[in-house]
Image (cartoon, rainbow, N blue to C red; front, side, top):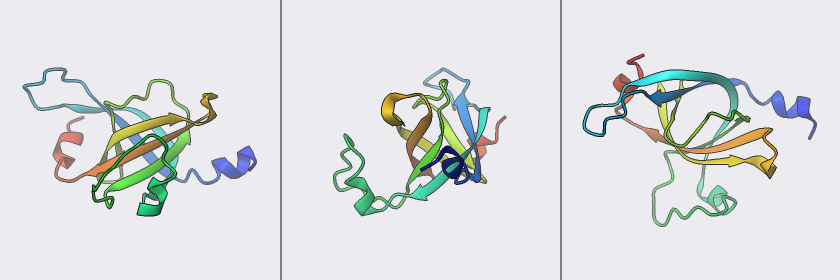
Length: 120
């Protein structure tokens, strides 16, 4: 697939959030640190077979989503993703082909933390 065809699928604006409160006792303060465009798909049961190195056991898979975006070096697993009014916890980051070009992300939708993500 050509680079132009790949980038044309990145139609969803997402924002990466980082917890600026490093205390484990206090509530998190999530601030926007990076905005990007991504391709987003829900992860269904048959997709888990293709996710190498991840064991979900008997976990219900409804809340898992697959994000694909350009590679951003400062993104890490302790961040969250904001997409519209929805918040996702990053579970796995994969640098596709280890080339620093494309980033695949497996994330779990978090319900009830919308107020935390809006404390910008």
